[in-house]
Length: 475
Image 1 (cartoon, rainbow, N blue to C red):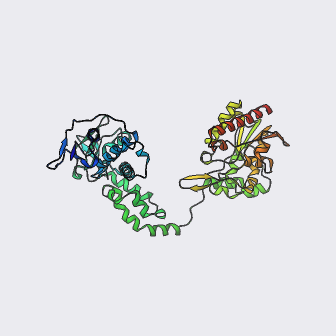
Image 2: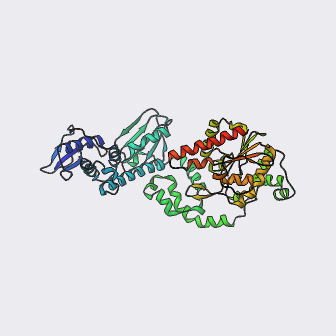
């Protein structure tokens, strides 16, 4: 048996040198082993000198990065697993791409566990204040699931660059003196402060943010495993918070409803929403129109949107650009075409020789229609009834702006402007006379973003720019 001597449990360079020497010498995986300090070898074991190194040979970068992570795993056979992969790479150069292979899958799973341990360290390290020679020194005791201290410590150096801190673990210590990051030998829990006065403030904040109506105990323990609770000041509150969650939730349900949003109530009172529209309310300017849309209840879309989004641009623009509806970013910003589709539109307008600042940009529908999918809000196409209900706002903008040319981006916009369904592909690029302006239909910029084929996307973008150049000629 050949033994590769390593200086520490995370000695990647030492393992790499020994493994390279073994493979160069033709030592099979079952004949090789790796021990920290050489270990207690058997009577006939041969310990590889730490300075020995075989011939260099190429290995995939993916393997090197994987090995650097797996080395930090606490499993005793991690070195042997990596050498087995290294040995096989000589005859199977594409081995790292075979994720169904038992050794490859095992290594990636261990790397995933190491990455998770690093993430948990970033989340659950709690510093306590200590005084050393009259200066503040923040110290934390932490027990990571794997040996990730040196890998994770640079994060804390960046995050807390202006304070002196130390992280003590059973594997080693990390120290930051506001200039340099250094590492030391293993530590014990008694070397860190047991508590400090700041913890009372932190516990008060933690308890105040606890929402009993959203309590999911299994999910919480999945994100905050009990193995870390001993080092978290707030963990002492968790059992009591869980036990009282049901009573607190019942109290929340029984409590009277809060007062309405005063800003919204003021808007509703000033505009007298429903009666004003019924009695022929007509906004006198764009600002009044923008305030009134926040009180719009003409269709249900307002319920899930952040706010209503009216158009923006030159007050007496000769060109009006009408899109479909606000997207996710527009809904948050309260402005039309500020997301990815807006960037495509801006670039195309510039190429066509049209200044967006000289145009009035708006949408056929005022509120963002979407469905939640995880943490994302996925766009949904408005229905004909929703477009028709929102046409009142678009007509009001046309009356105030009085454009000479109206560009409709997509079928929804065309329906909002023309009042009828159209086939954009058939009527695209052809001027359509209206009572107060000339309309020209083209595609929506988001359509260009969804085309997977690059060549097709480039051709469609050229057609889009050509449509905008036709608009410039109409102007």
